[in-house]
Image (tube, rainbow, N blue to C red; front, top):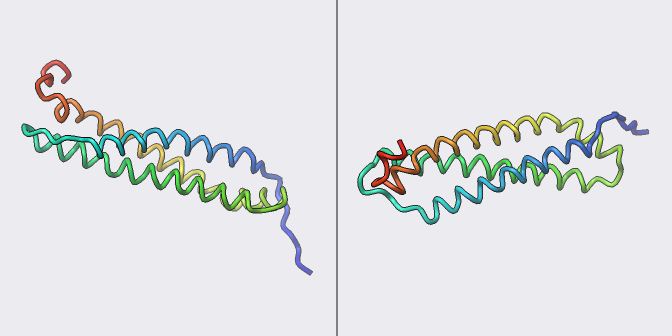
Length: 131
């Protein structure tokens, strides 16, 4: 006979946390994708160009991983038919929420620093007013 492990863990809260993190990350992923797609290099400042687009890439990568991992974990969770199975799955996978949150925070940091180079790239003629 096979014994089933039973845990008292709120899988709904865990799924909601993943969903909130993925939703928050989706905005910045879309924004930085737009910035990369329609970005124009500044002829005056190579450092600003490299910094602006160089920081956009880890933001896009971390954000995409965060959204994909959150979606994958929720997909696996909702494929389980019983509440007890979902609670057990969420309990065993709870450390992934921390990793997803860490990726989100790191992507927020790279996104913020990325925008620090926005003025020299997009509006070099206004740099003295914005810096």
